[in-house]
Every structure is written in C-alpha cells, then in structure tokens.
Amino acid sequence: MKIGLIGLGIMGKPMAKNILKKGYPDLLVSDLNKVAVDEVVACGAKAATNQEIGEQCDVVLTMLPNSPHVKSVMLTPETGVANFMHKGQVFIDMSSINPVASKEISSALAEKGVEMLDAPVSGGEPKAIDGTLSFMVGGKQEVFDAYKPLLETMGASVVRCGDVGAGNTTKLANQIIVACNIQALAEALTLAHKAGVDPELVFQAIKGGLAGSTVMNAKAPMMIEGNDKPGFKIDLHIKDLNNALDCAHSVGAPVPMTAEVQEILQWLHNHGKGQADHSAIAQYYEALTGIQIGR
Image (cartoon, rainbow, N blue to C red; front, side, top):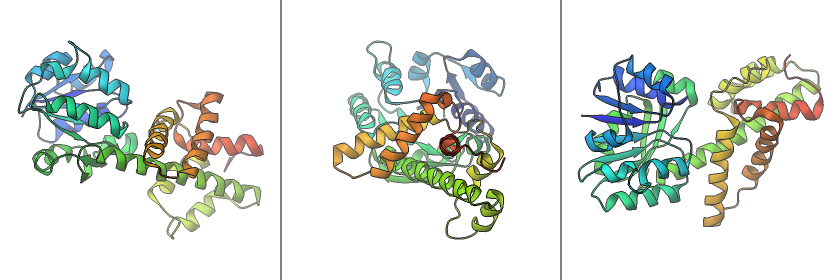
C-alpha cells in the first residue's frame, strides 16, 4: 500500500514515523516545513509534492490545523489534491475540523469515486510519539475496516462513531470535556494553594479516586511545575472550541461551560500565551490571585 501524508507538524511528524516503523514503508510526505520533511525522509519516507501524493497513493492522509487548511489542500481548483485523485483511492483526514467541512470535502470526493474517513485524534504530542493516540472515525463501515490497521500504527484506540462527520463531532465532544477538566483542575489547585494545602499532595490524594482522570495525570504535574511547554497549544484548543460552539449553535445544543472556558483561553491568547500548552489555563487563575500553583 502506498500512503501519502500531508502535514508534518507537532502531531503529524511523529505519526509519520510510526507509520514507517510499524509495517508501512512506502510513505510519501509533504509539508511546507522542509526541516520536518527531511527529518521524516531520514526515517525512510520519500518527499513528494501534493500532486504526486494525489496521483500515486492508494490512501491520502492529512494532519492539518483547521478546516480552511484541509479544504485548501484538497479542494483548491486545479492545484488541490482532489484534482489528481481517482476512483478507488481513499482520503483520511486526521485533522480536527468542523464536521460540516468534513461532509463538504466528502461530497466533493464522492463525485470522483473517492471514499473518505474523518479520523481526528486525541492524546497530544506524547501519544503521537508513542503511537497510542485515540482515533474517532466517521465513514462507511467497509472503508473503516479496510484502513483500521493503518490507523492502529498510530493509535491504541480506533473507534468508528458513524458516517462521515461523526469523527469530528466526537472530537468536539472530546475537546469540550478536556477543556472543562483542565479548567476545573486549575481552579481546584488554586483553591488548595490559597487555603494553605500543598497542590502536589492534593493531586496525589485525589488522582486515584472519582476525580482522577487522564487529563489530571497529564496536566496537574505541569501546572505544579509551571511547565507550559506545548503538547497541545492553547490556540489549537481555541480553534476546536470555536468549531464546537459553531456546531452547537447550528444544532441547538446548550454549551455554557464551553463558552466560559473559551473566554479563558481567549484571555490567555490575548496575553501572549497562545502557543503555550492548554494547561496554562492555570496561569489565568494565577493572574487573578497573584499566586503560583505549587511553586
């Protein structure tokens, strides 16, 4: 199987390396960042143009920032990858985008006989590196079944959630839960510190109980250490929550907590923290209280 991957950012680069390591050596890659391309080529991939990927690959993967980027790469007249694809090929978008955009791209590809899966991921850079991402997939069952082994080279969990668009709808639900958990964690550790209790001991005491979560285990140590090195950037979470709010408004779903967290993330963006990890939500509370959690 010849595979093409467009997008070698924080997530896409380690995902490409895992594809190579786990049994799919025929990989063509493309990115605007030549350094990232060269790094993946050194691991065994081949550099290619988007046109070459569209023409030559059995399956085309994208890992891009947002809906406009995926639509531009795939659907731009004359130069978009879809122009060079043909019947029997498959497109798998691993980006986190608006489900409406997923359906639009799928409809355009269907006219050429190209099947599509929307397959956004959760887990951030650490899980992209170790190949344990969670994939939330939308598309036809038979297409999902055929390409599940490929996705399993990058993820520990690969679940079909419904037809095209269902993957990104599920990812929006995931991002709401993650954002609200991080906000609640930051608020709780701020309370502990203000009340004179060591946030580290609070974390150790409650992480094994009902309040414990993957989010807590990943983000509490970062908050306590004052480490905001991005595994998943605030600006990307703002993008995801914008998509969640747009989707919620279109279907009439109430999402007041999502709106509140979005305002906090936007405040951090406006104060120079857009490229920080989303655990920097704790710094919003630090700005309000004048204290630094655990430091």
